Length: 134
Image (cartoon, rainbow, N blue to C red; front, side):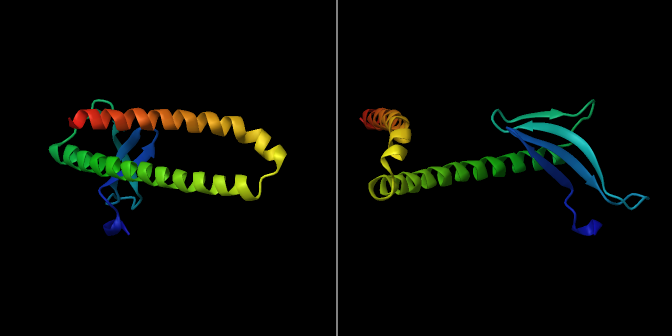
């Protein structure tokens, strides 16, 4: 089992991760996880745990993981947006074909405000992109 384990384990948490060094080659034949650092994905901060000094190999592995994690989160964001588009289409279909008057009364104002806000942001951002190209 120990030969299949990675050298590092990243415990995901809000805005980053806790990174551990995995040790399965000890005398007790159990898996030990030594805390190495706390990571913040948003600002790329790496905080070693305690008085620990991270090796260049540790830092390289951590930076590689952080880059891959940022790419994954960006892809998930885009997937969420595409799902939101699907949801808007399904909501329009629901409002047109299935919704009762009471259901529409419950959600219409909130939907209209959210869509107005989204439209305002999208129009402003598109105008900024067009002006930026000139």
